Amino acid sequence: AQTVTQSQPEMSVQEAETVTLSCTYDTSENNYYLFWYKQPPSRQMILVIRQEAYKQQNATENRFSVNFQKAAKSFSLKISDSQLGDTAMYFCAFMKANAGNNRKLIWGLGTSLAVNP
Amino acid sequence: DAGVIQSPRHEVTEMGQEVTLRCKPISGHNSLFWYRQTMMRGLELLIYFNNNVPIDDSGMPEDRFSAKMPNASFSTLKIQPSEPRDSAVYFCASTLSGFDYGYTFGSGTRLTVV
Image 1 (cartoon, rainbow over the protein chains, first blue to last red):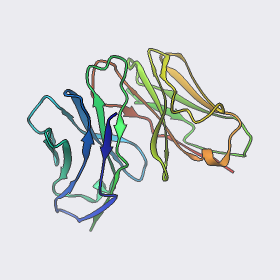
Image 2 (image 1 turned 30 degrees about the vertical axis):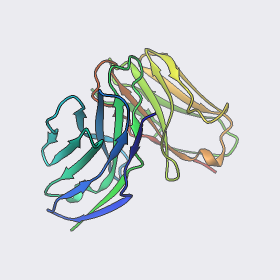
Image 3 (image 1 turned 120 degrees about the vertical axis):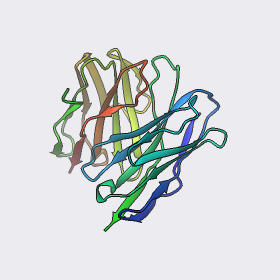
């Protein structure tokens, strides 16, 4: 069975600085997808970034980028130039590829990030 | 598209009462998921549907919980009778099978059972 581990329950960063959130996962699958979701205090779950396991290039979305290390089963999220609006809970998630109707996401427990002014 | 629409946004009810949560997925999405989120247990998948058919309901806590998806544009999650330990935020999410772009979530329903 797949598992997703986020080892940092809480983190903080100063505005405009860079922060990295860690995520590791365990799977025997070779093809899969990894996601980072953000949940701000408004509680809306928002997809931040997505990575396909068969792509070596790390995904990037504006100030958000990932460091995907497939052999190490690591999928960290880097937030550059942190903004107050980045304050949120961040969840890492895993989905098997080519799984037919099975679109279940396996979730980590989340990292609470506080961006301080 | 208006996104995934959930109602109500907040619900306060007395123990023993029936509660019905509603969800309208994004038009064209054919997979729908119900999640429960609490501080203690994080995000729990309760049930998910594909093409209106329940695929996996192993996360449904007990017989007090039931979910239906009578058509592609509507789903309900019902709790009867409700208990204080059911207090949580309930999310609905949808996606399109075959396109692994993750889920789109609704805004959630915060349920408080007193």
